[in-house]
Amino acid sequence: MRVTRALATSARTRVAGVALSLVLGSSACRPIADGRCTNRNHSVLFDAAGDHDGDGLDDAFEDAAARVYLPFLATHPEDACALSGVVFRARPHPDDAALVHIIYSRLYALDCGLNGHVGDNEAFGVTVDPRLPPPAGLVALVAVAHDNTPCERTTTCGTCAGMPTCDLVDGQPVLYASRDKHASVVDIGSACALGSCFDSCALPAQPATLPLVNVGEPDAPLVRDLSVQGFIRAELGWSEPALMQVDPWGAAIFGDAGSIAGDLDDPTLLPPACTCEP
Image (spheres, rainbow, N blue to C red):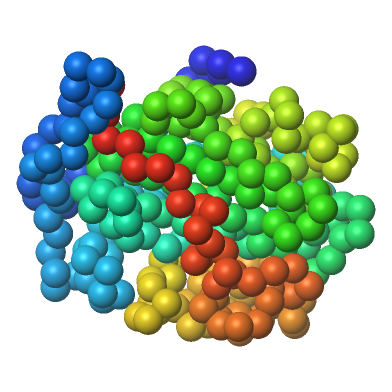
C-alpha cells in the first residue's frame, strides 16, 4: 500500500526542530560502492546534564525524538475500546551509538475482542537516525502481535537493506492496530487478515493522538507510577482498579495482559542499525 494522502505536519515539524537542534555533532554516513554503509566517524553528542536515566542521551532529546519519529498509529476506525497511551524507552542503538533505539509499549484499558480482558500491552521498536529529518529518520520498524500466544507474529519494515518497505502515509511508516484486539503489525496483508487469528486492520483518516511517557531505563527509571506520572487516571477515562498505580518497570503484569517491563527489554524489538542517507 502506498498512501499519498497529505497529513497536517506543522506540529511534527515544530518538534523536529527541537529534536534536531539537540544533535550537536555528527558526520554523514553514506553508502560505499557495494551499497553497504560505513559507520566511521559519526557520533551524536548530547548534554550530559539532561541525562537523568543514565543512558547517555539527553532526556529532552529522547522525548522529542520519540514523538517526531513515531509511526503513523493506525487504530481501526471501528475499534470499540481504543482508550490507550504509550510508554517508551529510548537509548543509543546497541549496534551503533549514533542511532537511537526506541521501544514503545501501547497500553490499552481493555482488549474487547474474542476472549477479551482488562489491560492490553502491544509493543513495537524503531531504529532512528536523528541526522535525517522526520519521517525519513525512522529507518527500521518491528512489531510483535499477540506476544506469547499461538497467534504471535513478528513483522518488520524499513529502509535498511533487505527489509520490506513500510506502508506509508505522507512518507510516515504505518503501524496498524487490529480492531478490538490491538495486534500491532506493519504488514496488513499477511499479518492482519481473517487467516491470521481473525485480526482486522484498516487505515483511519488520521493517526491516533496519544499521550507519550518516557519511563527511562531499568536501573534508572523516570516513572514508577503511571497514575501519578502518566495517563492512567480516572479523569482521563481509565476506570479499572487493576490498572491503577502501575509501575512500568515492576514485575506485575498489566491487568490480565502481559509485562510492560518485558516489552521494554525485549530483544525481538531491536531493529537493525541502518545509517544510509537517502
